[in-house]
Amino acid sequence: MRAGTLPLRAAAIALAASLLAHVLLLGGGRAREEATRPAARAASISLLRPPVPPAATRPEPAAQPLPARPRAGRPADQPSPAAEIHVDVETSSAAPTAPPLRLAGPASWRYRLRQGGQDGEASLAWQPQPDGRYSLRLTRSIGERALPAWESLGHTGAAGLAPERFALQRGGQDRQAVNFDAEARRVSFSASPARLDLPEGTQDRLSWWLQLAALVEAAPAPGGRWRLWVAGLRGELREWVFEAADAAPEDAGMLHLRRQPLGEHDPGIELWLDPARGFWPVRLRQGDPETRGYEIRLADVNS
Image (cartoon, rainbow, N blue to C red):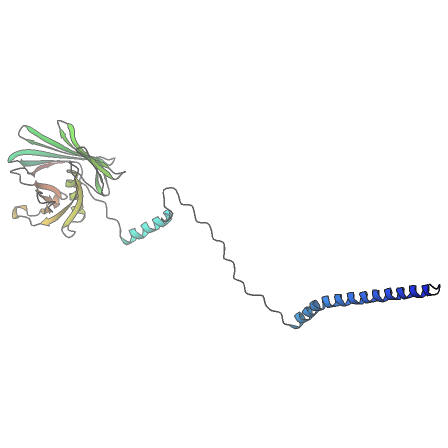
C-alpha cells in the first residue's frame, strides 16, 4: 500500500462517522418531537374548548343512629315505656275510668233462713278494716244444728272487693277452700286440681253479695243487666249475669234481680235489693227452699 493513501482513508472513515452521528442526533430529536406533539396538541385543544362541569353526584345519606338495644323482657317491636304511657293517657282521656265503688261500713245482718223445708237463722258479719283488709262471714243454723259456715277474706279497693281466700268451715276448721292469687292472676281449689286464669273482679260464693250491691249502686240501671265472675268450691268459674225482673206488690220499692241460667239443671238465683240500705240484699233465694235450695230474708239490722 502506498504511504499516501492512509491519510485519505482515515479522513474518509472520520467523515463517515461524523455523518452517522449527525443522522442519529437528528433522528432522536425528531422522535422526541413526535412524542411530545400529542400532548401539546391535547393541551391546545383543551384551551380552545369550554370547561365541562363535573358530573352531578348523589349526596351521601346522613348517618343513622343505631337502634336502641331492647331491654330485658321486652320484645324489640313493642313500644317504649314512654309510648305506653302516651297510649294510656289517650285511652283514659277518651274513656274515663269508672268511679270507685262504695261499700257499706261494718255491719251485722240477721236473716230468717228457710232451707230443705226447715226454718232456721243466718247471720252475716261484714268487717272492713282501715288498712284495706276485710272479713265477711256467714253462719247458719237450723234449730240446734249448725250448718257449715262461709268465710271470705281479702282486701278492698276502688274496684270493690278482691277476695284472697274463701273457705267452707265445719267446727271452725276450713274443709274446702278457694284461693285467689292476684299477682299470678290464678285461682286454685282445694277440691279440684284445676288452676284457672283469674278474670278481673272475680268474686267468691259470698263476696258477690256485697260486690253486686256496690255495682248496682254505682249504676242503678245499666240496661237492667249486671255482670260479675264467681268462683265455686269445686273448680268452677263462671260469669254470672243478673237482669232486672218484675217485683211483686209486697216487694214494692225493692229491686228484684234474677240470674240468667247457667245450664239445664241450674237451680237459679233471685235476690231483692233495698235502695234505702245501699242496695244491700234483704232477700235471697237459690233453688227451691222446700227441697235442696234455701232462702234468707232480712230480720233486723245492727250496725
